[in-house]
Length: 447
Image (cartoon, rainbow, N blue to C red; front, top):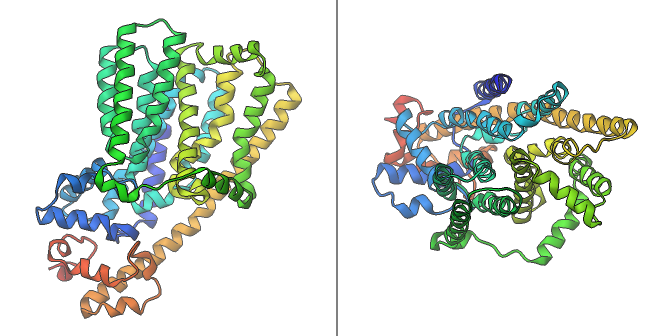
């Protein structure tokens, strides 16, 4: 645990270093839309509960908005850099929660070495720079933390105190992100498996099962809340077929990452001979061998459903876009986790030649992922350069009192999201409820 805590501090230090080098206080993209509106209504005392719960691209529910308001008051104004610093503390929390899933399996030194080697590529390579440097995507990280905690609680022997925390975290997660359904579905599967494979208090188990069903229904009702209906889309079988066809256009390295799933799963299928009843029985026995294996199975199921749901809802572009790295980065762990779950506990070993080939492929993929992360530094530098130039343009536009100045600049694409008119940004900066709270503006302009 000491090593995990040290590694968490290292993750935090890397994130804070990135913020110090490349961070900016100038709002970015849709911050000028929903977040500016949130602060204006807060200053005008016109914020309603419906404003807190309505979605923004199916996210930004009440928890994220309440956190933004708390930071807004704490920092004395709108500071994207302050949001970045807060969000940087969430990344090591994800690592620590994930570590709880595997700590009982890392007794040998070589396993700890593999685990931390992968963690360097996943958590220290700046593939998620966009999330850290934008600072307004905390719902992605929070939904991962709440979801993993729910799965951990569902895999433990049911007790009344566990039920209390499960319900509380489940409700908080419901108002954090639209993806809160995924961990609840995993918890439902875990609880059904637990009822079959473990001796436990039946009454408490049924009560926890009922709480899970209630949370699932509540989340589905929340998604069709009147304010949310405009954000929901219908996805049919043709969408899935089209998404599958688009896979052929993915870069080679992305197909390589998908092989992190395909190769180990194929090995498991043939080594266990899952087409036979005896092989399937041995496979299931690994999952219910102990509570640690059950939790690990829940984590892998959550990963599959999370990746599938986001890819299905947003297209193959979202599959590897950097802002979702906090989920997709876990793909690098999958061969190792599948080994811990299905091979290490079942006395099924690879032959030396097979192990060598798989190890070489795996090292190449991890190295490729790390190399891709290092290349992201170039984007960080470009982002910092562009945002500094945008800041000068915004200040100059206010000094000249001329929104047309923004139209004549070439970098305006960074300052607005859904609004193609930079005059929208100029109007927001002139708003008396917001102008004095734009901490990045010179004090004489704010007044």
